[in-house]
Length: 195
Image (cartoon, rainbow, N blue to C red; front, side, top):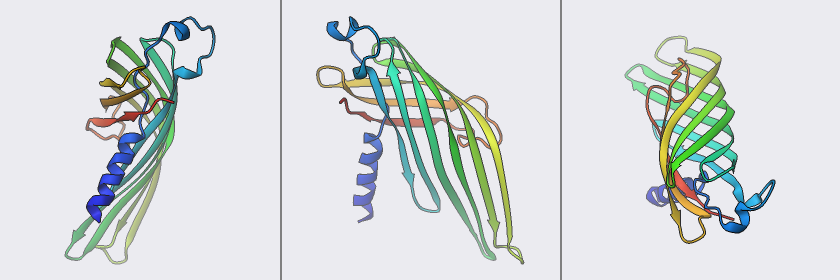
């Protein structure tokens, strides 16, 4: 049952994704003004359960301005908790992240892109230590800036360029103390289904 649930969650996470590829045709490239076919709707869905639990829901909305440039906005929500077992009790850390930011992509080649995403997140942390008597609970909150930089690859699926598979690697170059991205690369992958 756990494997079935894991497979379903993995497929859902891969489905909820960011639009990555837009191929203009002669009719849409001649249009003036707003073109709804250039909208990019998607986001990130991440789920991890166990002694370390992480739930990440980050929808985004963007627009493909040209074959070389796309930009948009994203909203972040993350919950995470981690538990350590000791002979005299447990220590549990949990945090919530709320925030958002803007993102931009530059496509120097048809299927390769560079990605920049400045964000401002509110991080709320709770540390509960049951190894001491009486139990200790510490709560803190911080406003944390991040700047995710990186790149990725987008592979169109089928004709027309509306659907694609993508994979990208990002890194928070600011590395503020309470950054939700810590000192590690951020991997994102999934599918975009064209409307």
